[in-house]
Image (cartoon, rainbow, N blue to C red; front, side):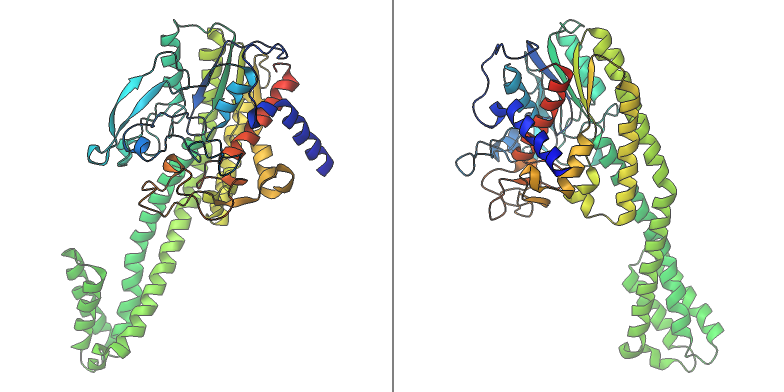
Amino acid sequence: MRHTKLALAAMALAVLAGCGGTDPAPGDQSLKVKYASQVSFGDSLSDVGSYNVGTVAALKGGKFTINGDNTSINATLTGKNWTELMAAQIGVAAPCAAVTGLDGDATKGFSVPAKANSGCYGYAMGGSRVTNPVGPNNKLTGSALGALTYPVATQIANHLKAVGGKFKGDELVLVMAGGNDALFQLGALSTAATAAGTAAAGPAYLASLIPQLAAGATNPQTAAVAITTAAQTAAQSGATQTVITQAAIGAAAVQPGNSAVAQASVYGPMVAKATADATAAGQKAGAAYATTHGPELVAAMGQAGTELVALVKSQLLANGANYVVVNNLPDVATTPAGRAKDASTQALINAMVSAFNTALTSGLSSEAKVVVVDVFAVSHDQATNPGPYGLTNVSETACNLTDTTKNPLGSSLTCNGSNLVSGDVSHYSFADDVHPTPYNNLLLARYVSKALVTKGWL
């Protein structure tokens, strides 16, 4: 197996040598297919600068990787993503963002009118989903950034409108989406599960605390009623848990035989136990909510995959596209964000990604004008066996995401050579918790190129 991987890597290096050094000249006759242009649809993994405006531009950001030409630090730090490398490989103009702008907080420099850029066919946008217009960092999520997040359906419609409704047939069309459908739904599930846990923790706290406070009274049953009334009265006034606790302690201390409970040394351990019981109850309720509703996310991802298949068939192929590359979702569970989740959440992520990828494979594998690239397989292998790929770190971020001065967004969108973590990050896999470094983008471009060579398109 190791020899196979090394052979694959060697082949990819030969195929995409230009991406690591000298780009092939336009019109390179060694290419089996002569492409006139490249068109890309998708999300942040393919975004070539949709949000490179306002404060983002001022912070020398704009793409979701390590931004800028930092080859003076290391030759791999080109600042390019995989779509830019693919354009160089097929000998067409470097891609530019079809639309630029932000719809966020003007006081922070995140309000720049959206502008369509003529002749630019890089439609992919950070935060974009397949058909839903509200993705991560869209203003409707409450984000100050105000990412535009035009869905892939809109991106394709915009391109067809720009070119007269039809592809010429000599474009290389790149499609990579679905990641934000997964991340958005996981975020919503986490929020709802947290709310369910909080709702369960409150009653559990009092259910544990009240009997403890009442136990020392001459008549514990009567004391419990009085303590419950005091706690409920405080809760109804919107008091904090601290105030509710003090009301309960106060009511307990005036019960016959129970004055000692007013001492911190007595009630302190009771509060600690109630807090622990509430935490356990909240965790159990949150986990139960996630378990119950997790299958809904898997089904939704399968639907998103089906919707992307429909777009490829009805909007790309049916309108004249002859060379369409569709990348499936990578191994999201092994990104730094995924690794930070518990085992059950990682299992859910895997099921969601599998549902999406299965829909793509079953819907597009028989289409002669489509190449489905199994990015999941190679990204999973990189995460578990990084050595043959030249990766030195597959679990940590190359960007310093905690430096709020140089990287106020805590994202690769505003990451550059000035705000990296210390040490050599040139062969790290991830720039931030989900986005690849320029080197990992190079690996992706090489893998896509290998698929095109196999297909006879390169």
